[in-house]
Length: 97
Image 1 (tube, rainbow, N blue to C red):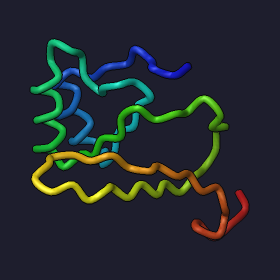
Image 2: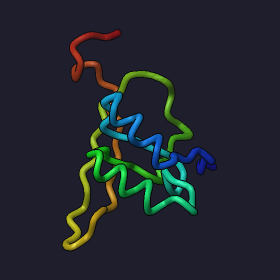
Image 3: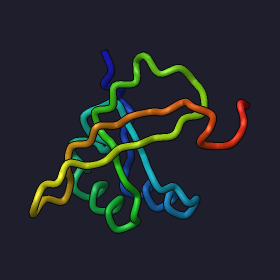
């Protein structure tokens, strides 16, 4: 049910990097358009912005979460599958707000 049609262009990556973005997560199969995929992913990598693609977000309610997304160890790869886990326990940020 996910798979939004949101996509970033290479130039947007540099704007996000200038704003201090460190992670981008999308429920689609890619954060980039098919025609610009390599350039966008390279720009993300060069800007030290991590990417989580294919997230299942349908049942996530708005709120504050702690994201835990450890990658599987894959030798010689430039990416790896993760088990993305959202934790909504307030203990991680010190108050129930």
